[in-house]
Length: 254
Ligand SMILES: C[S@@+](CC[C@H](N)C(=O)[O-])C[C@H]1O[C@@H](n2cnc3c(N)ncnc32)[C@H](O)[C@@H]1O
Image (tube, rainbow, N blue to C red):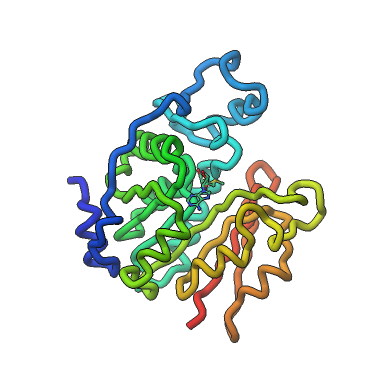
């Protein structure tokens, strides 16, 4: 039986504010399911070749916007992160908010892990959230996720009194833009664009967070996020012998 997301929120620490209503989003002309290499724009052909590593059910009708191909977390990595969160998160945490949901790679894996009473996926681009919801339907988990088409920073601010921080974990896979991305040996999280590590960490205040960042991220900058007396765990996630990204697991400041 399909779960009722809004009931879950009420049971698990987020109130029934109107912004929690989960809507259905329609695919737009920007959402594509490319079936032939010839139809794929040249700059994403490399990613299209890897489509089954990105979504094993690609052929079932996975849709993405052209930009979403660059940021989507490949399924084996997303599943491992979801499984690591299952192992490391205390049972008192029941809600996970994916604040940069993209095409749904991580949100789908969180739902498939059957760990969370409530999963909230926030994405600011309407076409991208429509793809994510479509993709979650393909994996049979769309109804387990509450879909919010909004700016995450505004959403977290607007709902600050209704989100029970003690029960909530934030997952953040932000865009990795910035002057130094892929050029510098060490990725500077302070100049990451459009959001610096500080912007994201501040938005997560009072909640445990898992930050999906470039594999070469500056570890000193990450270490500074550790609350006094606690540590930040950093895990590199590899596929075929190469790291795709790291995740910094940051405890909330008590
Ligand atoms: C790297 S992608 C996330 C990919 C996602 N983890 C996946 O597996 O598909 C980052 C996403 O964040 C979205 N985004 C950027 N700023 C945002 C904001 N302020 N609020 C919500 N979404 C935002 C972008 O539109 C983009 O789709």
